[in-house]
Length: 257
Ligand code: 1HE
Image 1: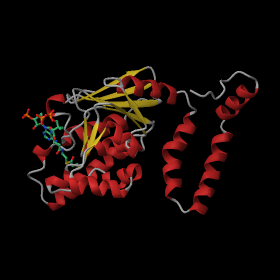
Image 2: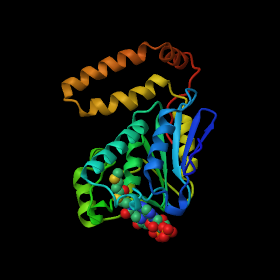
Image 3: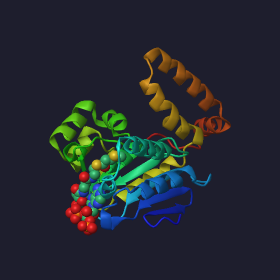
Image 4: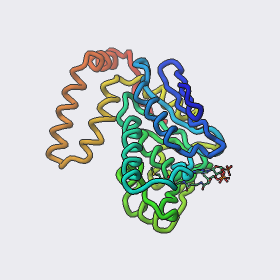
């Protein structure tokens, strides 16, 4: 990966994708959004999970506002669709993605975080949608993904009033699944990624591709899709081996923390 504002490292079977534009608080220029898309679209097939984080004191300040000025309505539409396509590669790419959050997770940065499968936030994290006060609207899939995390009422309030959620409030509201001490989000995200990478690939595929669709289907359709996915998953040789391993005492038990 040669893009100067994005770094891709492969450590064993984990991809580490890092926004490296700290001087601009990792603001997402068009070039950076395309680089992000390129990274997730072309992950090596050996990769089983990914972590995304941001260099410097903030995860991501959202859209690069310096590029906003010159766009007419048609170009704005296309720009938003470009973000949609890029973040679709994050959400529906080959592997689960864990976001390591700290500092500002705002605007398009929150849209990027929302496209990931798990969010780990450290205690410095804060969430906002400044689009509301900048006279614009979300354009990176935020109106689809963010209400699924926190509900449409909270998102409406954030955009109407400029409300900022701190790390604790954000975890309670549903932005993050894990809240960790300052400076430890990346380590926790990597630990989770390593665990995720040990799952059967078909299980991870089902969680990324089947579950969100089932959740949007009417119950009757959802039950049927679930049955199809369950049948396919348990038919895989790897699933059979994993169940056999448990029954023969070769696999770990579920243990409380
Ligand atoms: C930027 C951006 C940016 C910082 N675009 N350049 N997003 C926002 O409205 C958030 C705007 N940013 C901020 O509120 C603050 O910068 C932060 C809270 C994120 C960080 O504050 P701080 O004090 O650490 O940094 P700073 O001094 O404000 O910024 C450092 C530099 O980054 C500065 O440039 P410099 O040349 O003067 O050093 C800033 O101008 C620059 N910078 N954020 C461009 N966003 C698909 S639609 C999505 C729509 C949106 O995302 S709208 C929300 C945009």
